[in-house]
Length: 177
Image (tube, rainbow, N blue to C red; front, side, top):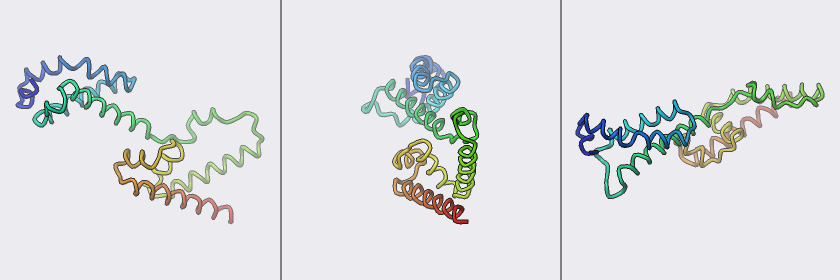
């Protein structure tokens, strides 16, 4: 049936979708816990299967395994994208984390420090800023950043190191002034 799909047979494509749609959608939903996103992932999985049907190798996996692997990879990519969106410190989530027991002086100092850090972060080149935020706020390792940004490991390490160094220099320079 997959060979017929590769040749553009519409009836074979309909049968193919009907055969695998529940498993593909089910896996996507189980991974992302969002029905709309799971539908998008399932649709993209079938599109990729049609595009790459001619290179499918039955010696490496069954069609079912191949489809579920495509779906799994797409779901992981979707989760990474969702996880990589940096949050603004002024969001409601962070406002709720402030302690009511703070002294006014502490709150003023923290507010000023946060502002200085935001200004210093905005001054960084975008690639360094992303690397620093992913490492510092999200606890990502250099290897994880390299994979998610599609860059070599050494480049990820350099971006983190350079970004942190520039942040430190900017914050120390402000304290001296």
